[in-house]
Length: 132
Image 1 (cartoon, rainbow, N blue to C red):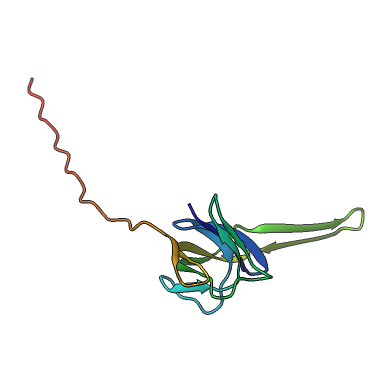
Image 2: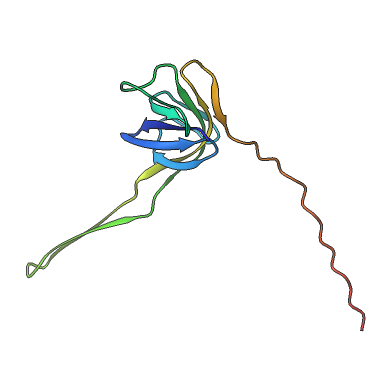
């Protein structure tokens, strides 16, 4: 299984195809849009690894934006004892949830691709009538 190390939002992530992860909010992005990450620091599999200096030119990772949202509230509470001074604040960090589709090598070859999920028809369950 191939993986890649990408950089986005000042952080580095080790990603595999088909994986869903939270990253810092991506600017000007809409739900179900395609995103390309071109800052690839390394990619490879169990046998071979390619490391950039600092990035690999031509390599990229394609992803779909699943949703933009906010994390849970982090409370900031400050108190100065015996001063009758309190301050309570809250913060909700924005994030983007993405699904990794494809990882490309520096020569444009697809290293790994996410499997397509096909919706199978639901099986109808019939209840048997019980006679007494």
